[in-house]
Length: 290
Image (cartoon, rainbow, N blue to C red; front, side, top):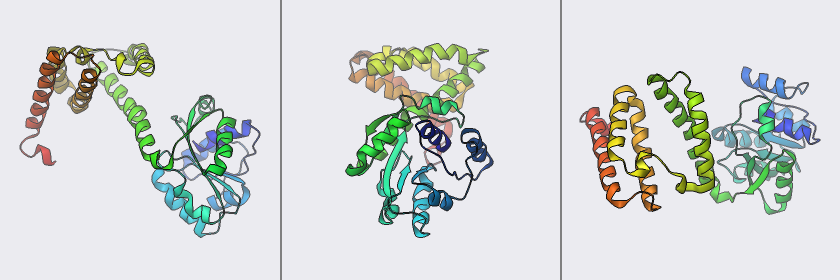
């Protein structure tokens, strides 16, 4: 993410002066997206920069900020921006005490480490959290990168991040599983088969929410769902738990929104309960404890 955001800011007129990269992959990304920008240790990046982007994994952010503050690397008046979805600006308190200006700017986008990332920032929403006096500065930086600022309260950052992970991360798992099962069923090009279907489903869901639900669960086709589970258990047992969990959630939402008839829901939920119990029995008497 770091090189892509820096490259986007460069296009807006900012001048990247230094970058820190440790792994071979991060060094390659920096060289590709920020050619001629020197790669230096983190402390030296702060020494050279008025605006610093901290683009590290969520669990590494707190320790990095504390370390930079303790070593005196943070300068008063320096804009310190992290890109973690989980955190607001409280995680930057050690740097704030050293005089830094804290911003949390999280792009709601997946990154590949290539130049395509810069293009994808156009119109991308950013979860923005900042002190009130820095709100305009935060929003301006997002707009300069081509994004759309969306204000997230400090207390809501974990919930906001969970929502994005629920959608984007789990979507990748579901699509990958679907392609695996299609290959097992003999489909030569599962990506080509799924592309139009999933594209339409996503578009419909974004436009209509639960009203876009289709398929055997929403229709209450209990026999079809039972057949699905039987086939998955035989040919792709690793997908059964996910199928059952999503089917139950889909049934609940379809029922709540009047798409699934109550008389059909009873049979469907009964099938899902039976197949779930069957899976537990297959695990053996210790299945719940493993």
